[in-house]
Image 1: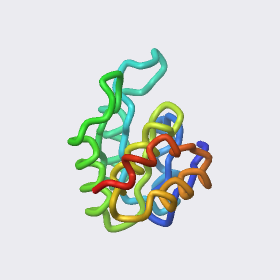
Image 2: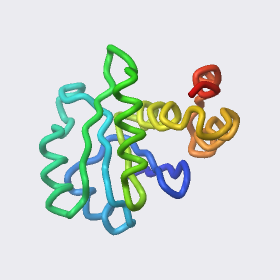
Image 3: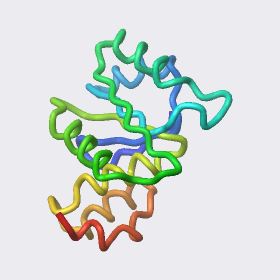
Amino acid sequence: MDVKRINDHVSVSPQISPEDIATIKAQGFVAIINNRPDGEAPDQPTSATIEQAAQAAGLAYHHIPLGRDGVSPEMIGHTKSVLEGSAGPVFCYCRSGTRSTTLWALSQAGMAPASEIIAAAANAGYDMSHLAGHLSQK
């Protein structure tokens, strides 16, 4: 696993497998957000498979797939709700970590200056500068 820490509460990663769940739990995460739609790649575990492994390990699991249709206000709201409602660090993943970082960044719009959100993402290796205009709005 290639885990990138955005801040104390959120980390992102490329695709995980059910076997990674024990490590995620051991690293102190309390919830997983899967931002990858099912069926993008033939070797990709389904959301249900990851959900079963997460629940068996005592982790909360949320599927907020970001696909070809792009970001919706509902996805942003759901992400914000999960992050605010979690009593500990949240592990988010997609194919590369970019979609997870995008939804995290947009869920933080208006809560922190756009420059801070962009810098946190950049420190984790993700360029969110193209979202600057959106991040300045509530």
